[in-house]
Length: 378
Image 1 (cartoon, one colour):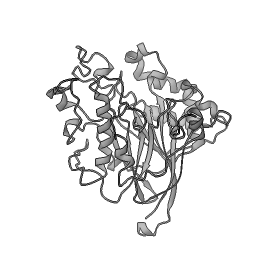
Image 2: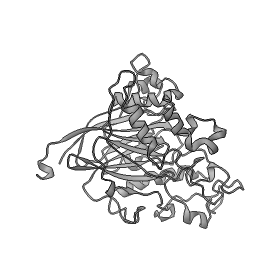
Image 3: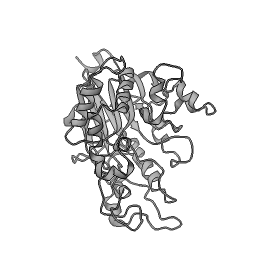
Image 4: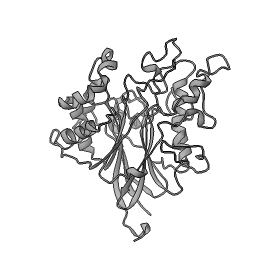
C-alpha cells in the first residue's frame, strides 16, 4: 500500500516547558553541588510539582510530547521514573497515560567551557562560562515522549554544530567597538545550540513525522553586546535554514551527516523557543523566520481563555504561553502532509477546573502546555 492510499491519521502534538530542573528543588547556592541529583531525588519523593505536571499531561493527553527543562540523566532513569511513577499513575482522577517510546540526549547547558565567556575576568567560574548557561551538565535538558515508534537510528542531533559555521552568523560585538565579544579562539569552539537541536523521526502508522526539538537561550540576561539575543536569533534561524535544501548545505550533525531536511517531509517544530513578536527582548524578526516561513503552517495560533484573562489589556494575551506574558512556546507544523484540526494552550480560567495547576509559579511551571491536533495526509 502506498502512502497516498493510507487512511489519514489524527494525533495531538504538544510542547511543555515543565520546569523540572534543579532550581525548582534545591536552593540556588546548592545548584553547583547538588543540582545533578536534584531531579532524581524529587522524583523519588513524589514531589507535588511533578505530580501537577503529570496531571496536566494526563488531562491534555498528547500523542507526541516535547518536554523542555527536564534535566538530562545519561542513565535514562529520570525519564523512566517520570513515566512509571507519575504518568502511569492516576493524578487526581485523571486516566494514566503510557508513552512506550522516548528520546533524550546530552545538551550543552552546564558543560563548562575553558573560556571566560561573560568577560568578567574569571574563566570557567560559574554557569555563565558554560557552553549553555547552567550550573551542572544536563540542566534544562529535553525529552521526547511518544505513543508511536521513534526511529532512533535516524535521529539527528546538532549539539556540536559550531555557531561560526553558520553563514552570516550574528557574532556579538563589544559595545561601541568593531571588535568581537568572543575572540577567535572562543568563536571557533562555540556551539550554536545553548542546549541542542534534534530531528527526531516518529513513525505514525507508516508515515514519518520529523519532530524538530530545541530550546534556544533566552534573549536576555546579558548586556549591550546582546550575545544571548543574537544567539537566540541564530538558534531559531537554524530551523528556518534546515527546512530548505537551498539554505541548509552548511549544516552538519553530530553523526557526520550533512545537509538539512529532504523536500516534502512532514515536520513539527516544537519547544520553548524563547522568541516572541512582543516587546524588544528578541532581535527583530526572530520568530518571524518561522511564522512567515513558506514551508511552515502558522495560520492557526494556539490560544486560551486563561491567558486572555491573565492579560486583559493585551490583545495578544490569549496567545501567551508563559506566566510572564509572552508567547514563547510553539508547535509549528509543515505545510506538506499535515492538516491542522485544532490548537490550544492549557490555561484554564480561574473559576474553571484544573485552574489551580497554573495559579502559582511553583505549582507546576511558569510555562503552559501548548498543543495542536493534526491530521497526517498524503
